[in-house]
Each structure stands twice: as C-alpha cells, then as structure tokens.
Length: 195
Image (cartoon, rainbow, N blue to C red):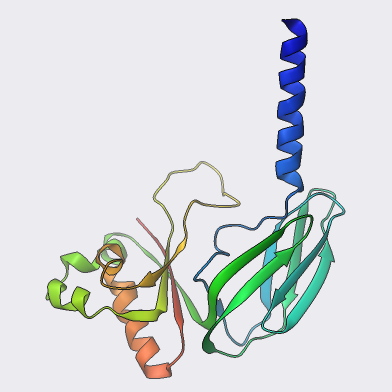
C-alpha cells in the first residue's frame, strides 16, 4: 500500500511537471482577440525554464527563452489595423494557435455599476440587440471574483459581438465601441473590468 502511495505521488509530480513544460499564455491571448495597433505589443506567458519560445503573427516572428522562473516575453513590432482574421501562433515544446485574430483599437473599460450595466437593461434593448451584428467588435469580461493579491491570469475569453452575445455585455462599453468602430473603420476590442 505504501508503494502504491509513492507511485501515485510520483505520477502526480510527473503530470504537474508535464503541464508546466507546455508553453502557455494568459487568457487575454485567445481566439477572437483584438490586438492593439500602432504600438510595440507585449506577448508573455510561461514555459519550462530555458525553453525556446517563438511567437508568430502577421509575418512577424520573434524568439526568446523562458527565464529560470518559467516566464517569457517578446515585444512584437507595431501592427497596422486590419479586419482580415489571422492565426496567432506560439511555439515551444508544444504549439498554441489562436484563430480569428484581428488588429485595431483596444480599450480598457472599468468602473462600477454604470460600466457594469448590461445592454439588455437599456432603452430600446430589443432593437439594439437585434441590430448587434458587429463581428469586428469583441468583448473580454473580467469575472467578478474577489482576490487578496493580483492574479497572473483570469478565467475569461474574447466574445464576438452578435445578437446572441451582446445582451450581457456592458452597455457603455458596447455603445462606445460601436461608435469608435463606425468612425474609424477598424476592429475594436473592449476589456471590461467593472464591478
């Protein structure tokens, strides 16, 4: 019985080590994301210490090596706005691919109840929801989970604007993003961190 416990503990350690060896990124990097145009773009994550990590997007290719604590970062050269979706790749011991990635304006939308107020609770909500067919406006909503210290990652994902997804998005963020998208003609990413 004692040997079985040692064997299971060893398996758990090996399993955890194999998970750590995989290159990974925080969830802000995901399918359907919008990347900010016109600035050096930081991309970061975790891998096995000393592991070579390559980031590829829009013809750009950057390489780095994970530090002794397993963290890594590269800075992509400034990108031009485009609504043509591309694949964002990160390659290490494994490969991670994010699809339907565009480049445009990314805005951080934060506040309290006014920013958290959702589209389905606004005036003319039924009409606004029915007309919310904007695949180049994407939302990323930080969950309302109280944490005593800053977190390195959160459980969230990018969501493309459609009549099915918009009812539960921030109304202020959406109406602002829609106006910006229509005025500039570029994709818009809205990161909503409100409570």
